[in-house]
Length: 325
Image (tube, rainbow, N blue to C red):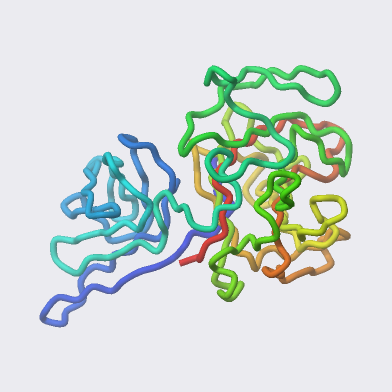
């Protein structure tokens, strides 16, 4: 069972023939994953697609459409060589070209990407050893050695963050299930700069958090406990600032069944308006996010694990705040 916990980006352009008659509506609403390696398949969701049409990446680089994996609502293409970050362009045989409202390999508003820009300040593991080989074990709480249930996935844009562990102690933040970026320069941060960067003047309703996520089928997420994401202030005394920040609580198992895993890497999107829970109780509404003071990022498994704590395995990459469309 696979589920995506986000709302996809909806965008569309009405196409009209010269006669004024309405053509098929074409929408490129979202991608399964906005970061795909050259030569691999990229999957776009929307409507009005046809294998007889054409698709171009940034700089007019044409992509080959995979006809047997394309229908009206799913478009599959092979990522060509030399592709740069940018929007996709769909060119129907009859009608006007349509641009996606998302960007492929979106490099705007990056908070951490674990390689070229910034790494996490605390928590998590490197998925590859010094020789570049995937790791097989991690050091857990104390001197515990944990064997990974499966091999870490291939990189999609350089190094990424890996979380793996068994969450046992209620309301604790342990390295194996905790990932934090602090903006403070003494902790290798970029300084007192908003997580929204160039988009700080945009309305909160226009912005979202995006990141790439991989949860293996061999170790599905059982929401025991949940994942919390929040943006702490620069001067947070405890570094993460949970008590000062509106929280997004991710519990896909409440609505999507008993467990969650992804089919390979997937791009996740959370509107910033959904960061509205208080650290004291979900019944207490918090927020909205103050983009002028929000500088840090925390992605953490936290809560009550219950009587039967479960394994948790997450790979994450490219945390970024960008326009929804």
